Amino acid sequence: MTWQAGTALFASDKDKGALKTLKPISRLLACAAMVFASPALADHTPDQLSAARQAEARGAEMYAYDQAAWHSTDSFQDDLKKRGWSLERAQQEGLSGYIVEPAANGRLLATFYRTKGGKLVAMARYWVLGSKVERGELIKDGEDNALSPLALRLIEAREKAIDAAVADKVFLCTKGNVNTVVLSPRADGSIPAYVMSAGVETGVFPAGGHYLYVFGTNGKLQSSRAFSKSCINVDSRAVPKDAAGYGLTHLLDPQPNEVHAFVSYNVPIKLFVIIDASKDLWEIDRGKIIYKQVMKDMP
Image (cartoon, rainbow, N blue to C red; front, side):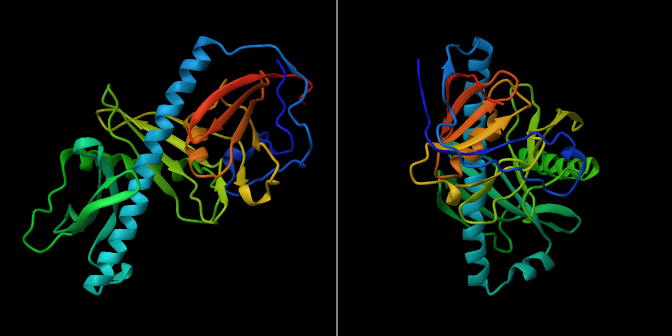
């Protein structure tokens, strides 16, 4: 089997000392023709394929929750303007953040919450399907502003994940505010909370500086992990028009993970991930992870 990607932009994730520094580190290798040349015959293992399918599903879920947060934020800001409020005024009124939880018929409910009378209550609610806010508005005085028990659990997980990331002194790869994606409880009741570097520049999206904190039903931290050892910002503007996509090396998993899938939804080009240990090459396009082959003659 022979497969060649043609010209590609290639970035490495080999700065093993980066996890304990707050400064972003980028290592961009030169653009070279026929990067993926002379492959050797090989195939993925069943465990790798299973993990890749799980990464696809998780990455799609992360993207859906992130989209709900993004588009509902636009609606929330529009509604604040209609009321004659600035974001600063909302914060003075106790605005603390937002959370996304599942709703009926495949929709997601994004709730902006505040502290009032010493407890957390809803300030606005928006129901989102895909990238469309179907309905929602600021909550008026006298209307039900109670948060669901699930929303309160998710908010707690979000706050604890941010605290843990600060305690771990994790590095971020952009200068924007930290992004969080907190998913609904898994089958075992645990809650995955992602603390992520945010995309702040059009055409550029961070593939490094992302972390996962998992909290059990008792609210205690079960596990945590980083997804990279350095900063890699995928700059689609720098990719030549004839390029197959943007190449990344990865050290921490034997196949692409959910963050790779999530990133691929946020860039207009394919990603090619080479696993450092095995030299396995994977293609990721809009969250779909496809095994290609093992590469030889790779450094």
